[in-house]
Image (cartoon, rainbow, N blue to C red; front, side):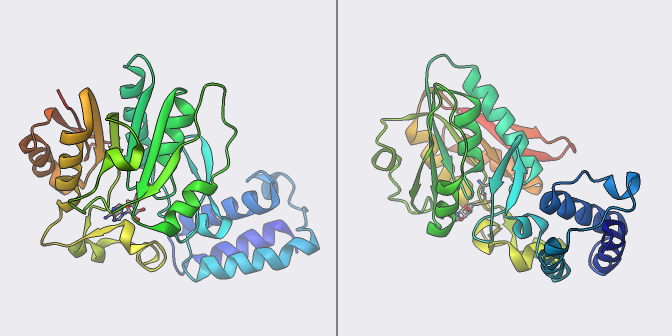
Length: 292
Ligand SMILES: C[S@@+](CC[C@H](N)C(=O)[O-])C[C@H]1O[C@@H](n2cnc3c(N)ncnc32)[C@H](O)[C@@H]1O
Protein backbone atom coordinates (compact mmCIF):
# COMPACT_ATOMS: atom_id res chain seq x y z
CA UNK A 1 0.00 0.00 0.00
CA UNK A 2 1.21 3.52 -0.76
CA UNK A 3 2.05 5.59 2.30
CA UNK A 4 -0.11 8.45 1.02
CA UNK A 5 -3.14 6.17 0.81
CA UNK A 6 -2.63 4.76 4.30
CA UNK A 7 -2.37 8.29 5.68
CA UNK A 8 -5.52 9.43 3.87
CA UNK A 9 -7.63 6.39 4.83
CA UNK A 10 -6.38 6.23 8.41
CA UNK A 11 -7.00 9.96 8.95
CA UNK A 12 -10.54 9.63 7.61
CA UNK A 13 -11.13 6.71 9.99
CA UNK A 14 -9.93 8.64 13.03
CA UNK A 15 -12.14 11.60 12.16
CA UNK A 16 -14.96 9.64 13.79
CA UNK A 17 -13.18 10.26 17.09
CA UNK A 18 -11.04 13.40 16.65
CA UNK A 19 -11.32 16.75 14.82
CA UNK A 20 -9.88 16.40 11.27
CA UNK A 21 -6.59 18.20 11.97
CA UNK A 22 -5.91 16.19 15.12
CA UNK A 23 -6.80 12.94 13.31
CA UNK A 24 -4.31 13.78 10.54
CA UNK A 25 -1.60 14.70 13.04
CA UNK A 26 -2.05 11.45 14.95
CA UNK A 27 -1.62 9.40 11.78
CA UNK A 28 1.48 11.38 10.75
CA UNK A 29 3.00 10.88 14.22
CA UNK A 30 2.16 7.16 14.07
CA UNK A 31 3.84 6.78 10.70
CA UNK A 32 6.86 8.79 11.86
CA UNK A 33 7.15 6.73 15.04
CA UNK A 34 6.73 3.33 13.40
CA UNK A 35 8.47 3.80 10.04
CA UNK A 36 10.98 6.47 11.03
CA UNK A 37 10.05 8.58 8.00
CA UNK A 38 9.58 12.37 7.95
CA UNK A 39 5.98 13.55 8.25
CA UNK A 40 6.10 15.18 4.79
CA UNK A 41 7.44 12.16 2.87
CA UNK A 42 4.01 11.28 1.40
CA UNK A 43 3.87 14.79 -0.10
CA UNK A 44 7.43 15.06 -1.44
CA UNK A 45 7.53 11.42 -2.59
CA UNK A 46 3.94 10.34 -3.20
CA UNK A 47 5.01 7.00 -4.72
CA UNK A 48 6.56 5.79 -1.43
CA UNK A 49 5.16 2.38 -0.51
CA UNK A 50 4.80 1.02 3.02
CA UNK A 51 7.15 -1.99 3.30
CA UNK A 52 4.88 -5.04 3.15
CA UNK A 53 6.08 -6.49 6.44
CA UNK A 54 5.27 -3.22 8.30
CA UNK A 55 1.67 -2.95 7.17
CA UNK A 56 0.07 -5.49 9.59
CA UNK A 57 1.64 -3.69 12.56
CA UNK A 58 0.44 -0.31 11.34
CA UNK A 59 -3.08 -1.66 10.85
CA UNK A 60 -3.06 -3.04 14.41
CA UNK A 61 -1.95 0.36 15.68
CA UNK A 62 -4.74 2.01 13.72
CA UNK A 63 -7.29 -0.33 15.33
CA UNK A 64 -6.06 0.73 18.77
CA UNK A 65 -6.21 4.43 17.83
CA UNK A 66 -9.69 3.98 16.38
CA UNK A 67 -10.71 2.37 19.68
CA UNK A 68 -9.57 5.51 21.50
CA UNK A 69 -6.18 4.35 22.84
CA UNK A 70 -3.93 7.43 23.11
CA UNK A 71 -1.08 7.49 20.57
CA UNK A 72 1.53 7.52 23.33
CA UNK A 73 0.23 4.21 24.70
CA UNK A 74 0.15 2.75 21.18
CA UNK A 75 3.78 3.75 20.56
CA UNK A 76 4.81 3.08 24.18
CA UNK A 77 6.61 6.42 24.44
CA UNK A 78 5.87 10.06 25.26
CA UNK A 79 8.09 13.07 24.67
CA UNK A 80 8.68 15.18 27.76
CA UNK A 81 11.25 17.90 28.47
CA UNK A 82 13.29 16.92 25.42
CA UNK A 83 13.45 13.22 26.27
CA UNK A 84 11.48 10.15 25.27
CA UNK A 85 9.88 8.38 28.23
CA UNK A 86 8.38 4.91 28.25
CA UNK A 87 4.68 4.99 29.00
CA UNK A 88 1.88 2.46 29.16
CA UNK A 89 -1.56 2.40 30.78
CA UNK A 90 0.02 1.95 34.23
CA UNK A 91 1.07 5.62 34.17
CA UNK A 92 -0.36 8.99 33.25
CA UNK A 93 0.92 10.36 29.94
CA UNK A 94 3.08 13.36 30.93
CA UNK A 95 1.42 16.64 30.00
CA UNK A 96 2.94 19.83 28.49
CA UNK A 97 2.00 21.90 31.58
CA UNK A 98 4.16 19.57 33.68
CA UNK A 99 7.11 20.55 31.49
CA UNK A 100 6.58 24.07 32.85
CA UNK A 101 6.57 22.65 36.38
CA UNK A 102 9.94 21.02 35.66
CA UNK A 103 11.30 24.27 34.19
CA UNK A 104 10.43 26.08 37.45
CA UNK A 105 11.94 23.25 39.52
CA UNK A 106 15.13 23.44 37.44
CA UNK A 107 15.32 27.20 38.13
CA UNK A 108 14.94 26.55 41.87
CA UNK A 109 17.67 23.87 41.83
CA UNK A 110 20.06 26.04 39.80
CA UNK A 111 19.52 28.98 42.14
CA UNK A 112 21.13 26.91 44.90
CA UNK A 113 24.76 26.03 45.30
CA UNK A 114 25.80 22.47 46.06
CA UNK A 115 23.89 19.23 45.61
CA UNK A 116 20.13 19.21 45.95
CA UNK A 117 17.92 16.52 47.45
CA UNK A 118 14.62 16.48 45.57
CA UNK A 119 11.48 14.67 46.58
CA UNK A 120 9.10 14.11 43.64
CA UNK A 121 5.80 13.08 45.23
CA UNK A 122 3.27 11.28 43.00
CA UNK A 123 5.98 10.49 40.48
CA UNK A 124 4.03 8.26 38.03
CA UNK A 125 6.30 7.59 35.02
CA UNK A 126 9.10 9.33 36.92
CA UNK A 127 9.23 12.04 34.26
CA UNK A 128 9.83 14.84 36.81
CA UNK A 129 12.44 13.01 38.91
CA UNK A 130 14.32 11.82 35.82
CA UNK A 131 14.25 15.25 34.16
CA UNK A 132 15.63 16.97 37.25
CA UNK A 133 18.27 14.30 37.86
CA UNK A 134 19.49 14.50 34.27
CA UNK A 135 19.18 18.27 33.73
CA UNK A 136 20.72 19.24 37.04
CA UNK A 137 23.77 17.05 37.74
CA UNK A 138 24.33 16.71 41.48
CA UNK A 139 20.60 16.31 42.13
CA UNK A 140 19.69 13.35 44.28
CA UNK A 141 16.06 12.64 43.35
CA UNK A 142 13.59 10.31 45.01
CA UNK A 143 10.27 9.64 43.27
CA UNK A 144 7.38 8.38 45.41
CA UNK A 145 4.11 6.86 44.25
CA UNK A 146 1.32 4.76 45.71
CA UNK A 147 1.11 2.62 42.58
CA UNK A 148 3.62 -0.23 42.39
CA UNK A 149 2.74 -0.60 38.70
CA UNK A 150 3.64 3.04 38.01
CA UNK A 151 6.92 2.62 39.90
CA UNK A 152 7.85 -0.32 37.62
CA UNK A 153 7.56 2.04 34.66
CA UNK A 154 9.50 4.82 36.43
CA UNK A 155 12.36 2.44 37.26
CA UNK A 156 12.50 1.06 33.73
CA UNK A 157 13.13 4.39 32.01
CA UNK A 158 16.40 4.17 30.16
CA UNK A 159 18.64 7.18 29.80
CA UNK A 160 22.36 7.68 29.58
CA UNK A 161 23.47 9.19 32.89
CA UNK A 162 25.72 12.23 32.28
CA UNK A 163 28.89 12.73 34.30
CA UNK A 164 28.06 13.96 37.78
CA UNK A 165 24.38 13.00 37.51
CA UNK A 166 22.73 10.44 39.75
CA UNK A 167 20.12 7.89 38.72
CA UNK A 168 16.88 8.75 40.57
CA UNK A 169 15.53 6.31 43.14
CA UNK A 170 11.90 5.34 43.49
CA UNK A 171 9.87 4.21 46.49
CA UNK A 172 6.31 3.19 47.21
CA UNK A 173 4.26 5.08 49.80
CA UNK A 174 0.87 6.68 50.35
CA UNK A 175 1.47 10.39 50.81
CA UNK A 176 -2.05 10.80 52.24
CA UNK A 177 -1.19 8.50 55.12
CA UNK A 178 -0.59 10.75 58.16
CA UNK A 179 2.28 8.44 59.16
CA UNK A 180 4.06 9.06 55.80
CA UNK A 181 7.71 9.35 56.81
CA UNK A 182 9.84 11.12 54.19
CA UNK A 183 13.02 10.72 56.26
CA UNK A 184 12.65 6.95 56.64
CA UNK A 185 11.80 6.57 52.96
CA UNK A 186 14.65 8.71 51.63
CA UNK A 187 17.35 8.21 54.23
CA UNK A 188 17.77 12.03 54.23
CA UNK A 189 17.38 14.41 57.14
CA UNK A 190 15.55 16.85 54.85
CA UNK A 191 15.10 17.93 51.22
CA UNK A 192 16.06 21.15 49.45
CA UNK A 193 13.16 20.85 46.99
CA UNK A 194 9.77 19.16 46.96
CA UNK A 195 8.00 18.95 43.62
CA UNK A 196 4.67 17.30 42.89
CA UNK A 197 1.98 16.89 40.28
CA UNK A 198 -0.65 15.11 42.38
CA UNK A 199 -4.14 14.05 41.30
CA UNK A 200 -6.24 17.26 41.25
CA UNK A 201 -9.15 16.88 38.84
CA UNK A 202 -12.47 16.98 40.65
CA UNK A 203 -14.92 14.17 39.94
CA UNK A 204 -17.41 16.73 38.66
CA UNK A 205 -14.88 17.78 35.97
CA UNK A 206 -14.95 14.29 34.38
CA UNK A 207 -17.82 15.32 32.13
CA UNK A 208 -15.64 17.94 30.38
CA UNK A 209 -12.79 15.49 29.68
CA UNK A 210 -12.07 13.57 26.49
CA UNK A 211 -13.54 10.06 26.78
CA UNK A 212 -10.14 8.59 25.79
CA UNK A 213 -8.51 10.00 28.91
CA UNK A 214 -11.31 8.63 31.08
CA UNK A 215 -11.21 5.21 29.44
CA UNK A 216 -7.46 4.66 29.12
CA UNK A 217 -5.49 6.67 31.69
CA UNK A 218 -5.28 5.53 35.33
CA UNK A 219 -8.06 7.09 37.44
CA UNK A 220 -5.78 6.92 40.50
CA UNK A 221 -3.53 9.47 38.78
CA UNK A 222 -6.24 11.97 38.01
CA UNK A 223 -9.20 12.34 40.31
CA UNK A 224 -10.05 13.70 43.71
CA UNK A 225 -13.49 13.74 45.32
CA UNK A 226 -15.61 16.89 44.87
CA UNK A 227 -16.05 16.92 48.63
CA UNK A 228 -12.28 17.24 49.27
CA UNK A 229 -10.40 18.47 46.18
CA UNK A 230 -7.41 19.76 48.17
CA UNK A 231 -6.67 16.56 50.10
CA UNK A 232 -3.29 16.08 48.37
CA UNK A 233 -2.28 19.70 49.01
CA UNK A 234 -2.97 19.36 52.74
CA UNK A 235 -0.69 16.30 52.78
CA UNK A 236 1.92 18.09 50.64
CA UNK A 237 1.78 21.15 52.90
CA UNK A 238 2.41 18.95 55.95
CA UNK A 239 5.33 17.21 54.24
CA UNK A 240 6.85 20.50 52.98
CA UNK A 241 6.56 22.12 56.42
CA UNK A 242 8.17 19.17 58.20
CA UNK A 243 10.76 17.95 55.70
CA UNK A 244 12.11 20.94 53.75
CA UNK A 245 15.39 22.29 55.08
CA UNK A 246 15.51 26.01 56.01
CA UNK A 247 15.48 27.91 52.69
CA UNK A 248 14.12 24.83 50.93
CA UNK A 249 11.52 25.33 48.19
CA UNK A 250 8.46 23.61 46.79
CA UNK A 251 6.63 23.82 43.50
CA UNK A 252 3.36 22.00 42.90
CA UNK A 253 1.03 21.66 39.93
CA UNK A 254 -2.55 22.64 40.80
CA UNK A 255 -6.13 22.74 39.56
CA UNK A 256 -6.59 26.04 37.73
CA UNK A 257 -9.96 26.52 39.45
CA UNK A 258 -8.45 26.39 42.94
CA UNK A 259 -5.40 28.68 42.88
CA UNK A 260 -6.08 30.92 45.92
CA UNK A 261 -7.58 28.03 47.93
CA UNK A 262 -4.52 25.85 47.28
CA UNK A 263 -2.12 28.68 48.18
CA UNK A 264 -4.06 29.20 51.44
CA UNK A 265 -3.53 25.55 52.44
CA UNK A 266 0.24 25.98 52.09
CA UNK A 267 0.27 29.33 53.90
CA UNK A 268 -1.74 27.88 56.77
CA UNK A 269 0.96 25.20 57.17
CA UNK A 270 3.47 28.01 57.84
CA UNK A 271 5.14 28.00 54.42
CA UNK A 272 6.43 31.35 53.16
CA UNK A 273 6.36 33.47 49.98
CA UNK A 274 3.57 31.26 48.65
CA UNK A 275 2.70 32.35 45.15
CA UNK A 276 0.33 31.08 42.46
CA UNK A 277 2.06 30.96 39.07
CA UNK A 278 0.31 30.90 35.70
CA UNK A 279 0.99 28.53 32.80
CA UNK A 280 1.59 29.67 29.21
CA UNK A 281 -2.18 29.85 28.70
CA UNK A 282 -2.51 32.32 31.58
CA UNK A 283 -4.18 29.78 33.87
CA UNK A 284 -3.37 29.39 37.55
CA UNK A 285 -1.33 26.19 37.31
CA UNK A 286 1.42 26.07 39.94
CA UNK A 287 2.03 27.04 43.53
CA UNK A 288 5.57 27.85 44.60
CA UNK A 289 6.92 28.75 48.00
CA UNK A 290 9.66 28.32 50.56
CA UNK A 291 10.16 26.81 53.96
CA UNK A 292 11.79 29.89 55.48
C1 LIG B 1 -1.19 13.36 38.04
S1 LIG B 1 -0.25 11.87 38.16
C2 LIG B 1 1.38 12.54 38.01
C3 LIG B 1 2.36 11.60 37.37
C4 LIG B 1 3.68 12.28 36.96
N1 LIG B 1 4.34 12.89 38.10
C5 LIG B 1 3.43 13.32 35.90
O1 LIG B 1 3.51 14.52 36.20
O2 LIG B 1 3.15 12.96 34.75
C6 LIG B 1 -0.42 11.53 39.89
C7 LIG B 1 0.28 10.30 40.45
O3 LIG B 1 -0.07 10.22 41.84
C8 LIG B 1 -0.11 8.86 42.23
N2 LIG B 1 -0.88 8.79 43.48
C9 LIG B 1 -2.23 8.77 43.62
N3 LIG B 1 -2.55 8.72 44.92
C10 LIG B 1 -1.38 8.70 45.61
C11 LIG B 1 -1.07 8.65 47.01
N4 LIG B 1 -2.04 8.61 47.93
N5 LIG B 1 0.24 8.64 47.37
C12 LIG B 1 1.22 8.67 46.43
N6 LIG B 1 0.98 8.73 45.10
C13 LIG B 1 -0.31 8.74 44.69
C14 LIG B 1 -0.73 8.17 41.04
O4 LIG B 1 -0.44 6.79 41.04
C15 LIG B 1 -0.10 8.94 39.87
O5 LIG B 1 1.05 8.27 39.42
